[in-house]
Amino acid sequence: MHRWLMVLCFMAWPTLGLAAEDNGHGRHRMNRGQASPQRYEAAGDPAPLGTGSEVPPIHDNEIFGLFRADRLEYQSGEGQDLGVWDVQAWAGTDYHRLYLESEGAWLLDAEELEEASLELLYGVNIGIFWDLRLGLRHDIEPAPSRTFASVGVQGLAPLWFEVDAAAFVSEDGDLSAQVEAEYDLFLSQRLVVQPRLEIGLALQEVEANGVGQGLNTIELGVRLRYEIHRKLAPYVGIAWSRKVGETADLAEAEGEEVEVTSFVAGVTFWF
Image (cartoon, rainbow, N blue to C red; front, side):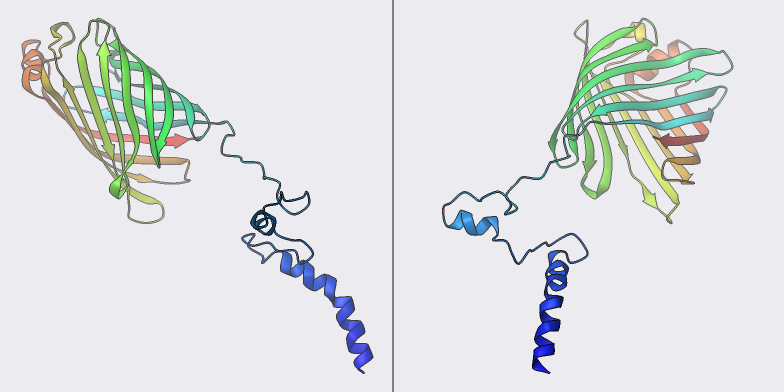
């Protein structure tokens, strides 16, 4: 009887050894027939090949790419209908990326651009969830067109606010800045409320472009989106914008609206 038990144990030993090699979650691996690399390191000897000392390939430097439309929307405002876009494409690793971004508004009734800008940026990771971004921005509208050097940060602030803040220096030495903040509040797995804030300011007046000194624009909005898929979500909402300070004075002198409240309908997607 004892002889048969010894035979069964001997036959089962390889199976037990393989089972101990992986716990089913990939978090702990152990081979009873091998010495660990730590054991050799403690003895001051280099770990020989076959002891698990080979460094596995690291994939965080692999090049990825993404296109994202944060906003493709129709705005029905007071006396004007707009088509608004805010899109971004990037390519790179987790640490270094090249961004191409564009945002603007198209006057649907007049069939002309109201605002349009294009940015080419280089981003480098400077912390958990934060990138430092440097590059160029070109404002196509409002005329006359202007080009800026840009420096800013983009990332997740405490409490998971998405923040994009940048400072700009024009070819004429004019300084300005822009801050955007968004927050996703999940009502369910698919229904999301997103408040949004955007603020613009300038240190110098640029009358030709309707820009006053100081705080010049404030935009507030709230959008309710339904995520058909994580990559595709239609939404509706309300957007409010106001020109303030000297910028409001310049707009009134040109007969433009200073404050606009709009109904919003659009879609956001990425791939």
